[in-house]
Image (cartoon, rainbow, N blue to C red):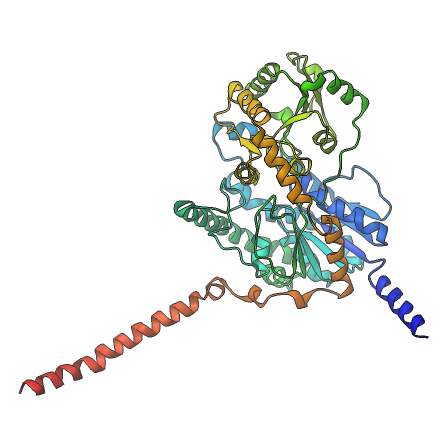
Length: 511
């Protein structure tokens, strides 16, 4: 009898969160934001969960149990917004995005998403959990309120800590570099001063943008939608796209788990055409060049393209280059270079003949290069690329080149240096060991905590009361101000009442 009860209890425990309906949402402006969500979805679906995934990039594949919702307004907005010349702007020394572009993105993309019927139809469905992108989650928080379900974040931008701060997690300016700045967590005095300044400037731009976004959310979802900052503070759990070996050691609350490299996987054999091309290099090996999904190599200025072609022609290695254009358009392509619109990046990074990776320094690319133990030459372009590159350089497995001052000669020297100086590969391999030495895989960690939140209908018991404190309260500055006020009050009272009495007593003694 006891055995039957135990078996029944076990079955109930195992099935308590089976078949959950989960709504995932990312409004990130680049396709890389989708990847952590898709990896988690692929891990949850075999466990009986149904995933609905709202994003701005049409699906590349179909998977039973996964429904991708791509509102046409969101897709069109991202396509128009990201029709940018990032490489050209960086080479000219301009800001890749103007302050106006940064300011308008959040509320314009919110308006484009919420005015679409596909988005609003989701409000007629029932979900057990919502998982939002920690980068720009504010618009989706209105949907959280309307659907009345617990929610989590996947912080896709590993160095972004805004949502963690709102949840009460300590993120001091002294050791938390702004995610778009080329500094590490080990800052000198003026670097800390600069970091505080840029972080505060970011807040200055962010706050009015969020106030307008609040207006947009209430216009579409009703005037009773609470303040979005208050909604954000109620997050049950945060899956942080970081890990001490590839980002920074951080003091994390119980409702935060790190899942860096959730998408990383061992290399598979390459397609025959790529393998044949690499085999032609003999034991010299090859270089892999990719600027990721956010920076279109085909849109680069012609003088940069010519610079890269000249550099590759001088290398004694073969070069695989992710380039989104027809080879027929590159009439000056050297014989040692092969281009492809899409290339299996992780399979390439794990190839035994790969000698170096030349990249823009996107977060997922940097995670993959550590996972496969490959030295890197980075050419940061925008957003978190500089921060990612700064961390990789500090860890000793990367060299950074500035696009403003890059030359063919400097690129060739940098590639030779990371290949022939054994320090770079040794440090890449050391970081690889540290990254993989975990008690569970990032995917297993993410699945466990997702189902944990479902089992308990939210993880509110893990929340810290620090999330409800403002800046002055959190850092006890209100107490400091209070004590200063008390001191000044006592001083004033002393001057007003005691000083005249002391003077009077002194006069009496003299007489």
